[in-house]
Image (tube, rainbow, N blue to C red; front, side, top):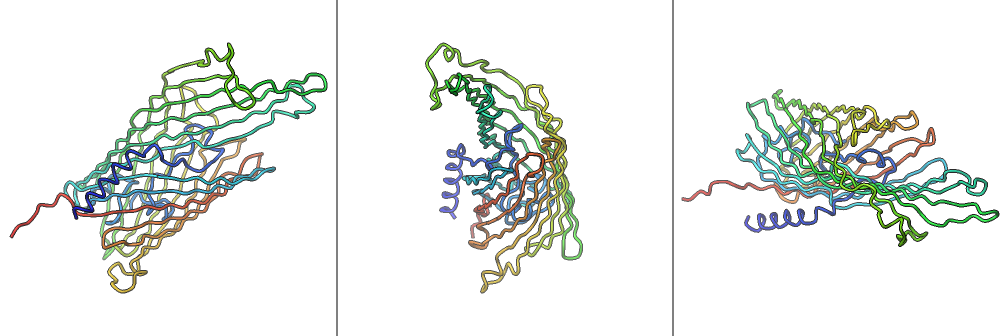
Length: 431
């Protein structure tokens, strides 16, 4: 027991120190908008069930999608997750593949009153930018004003969250989560001017304009859960509300003249490269409503369905709205099955198997076309001992379309996590 706790605490501190290495989400040109691609909040068990779980609670996993579900926490649990992603990006003329990955999240949850009141601490990404786009403004041979542009963005907004859940009655639970959001997002545009000098085309230099937003502020999520027993099974209803977040944002705008090798030139233009430094503003993330329904036979099987709505037309940055955003509705459906959790001879009967799907319309609307996505998921939990698991989830999906000069992405996500459960804070008994 002591070795487990020592190792667990060492793992937690290691995660904290390497938190800056959180993986960015898929390389995607659609992350160029707003605060980038918003990360799935669910953990690997949820990922395998189509990312559903607002009303789903398991004794073996931390309920991250609804803080109210924490009230049923029986064990002290630690979970850390990794992610590897492949994205095949194509338009009408080109196609390429990107692969990335890394640490995804880490969470510690423990009951103050087992089965009644519990809290959790988590470190995870909120959103990320990861894109690079090249564009020709016109025909470089025939147009003397032709130019090349390259757009690049990177960065992550992370969340350090403190959640608590309370079973106020046998059937009703409430919860709340406070998130400290921090990190930076950078968008950079490099212009390559082409000058026509008679019969000669000359590129004298590059112009780089870089915009960096640093975020530091709180956001809040409220949750509730109602469950009732039907025979030997349970019917659970959950609801969550993400309060509109007004994130304090500090912006720096940096302009430079570069050589063709993208090395800053030493000249007067670069003497005062900062056009705007430490400009204070606000980034508004719109409110979100989610509801979920689960039908559960404890330690055997569960079926879950979630629906959420968020109006991203309310998004703004420094008081400026983005017309490329609209409403987003998401539907997530999934289930899990464990043949025999108590089997002592057949390991595969103690394995939990999962499958699901998710559908999302928006929130991006580009060229009058909604950027929708669809994913199919599979997963499993492999027991290490009676309490802890290795969890796997695999998702294959598509985002966007080739219509209207847009980009289509076909992505693969592989998620891996380790869940360690134990009983802490129990009064020692003596004979």
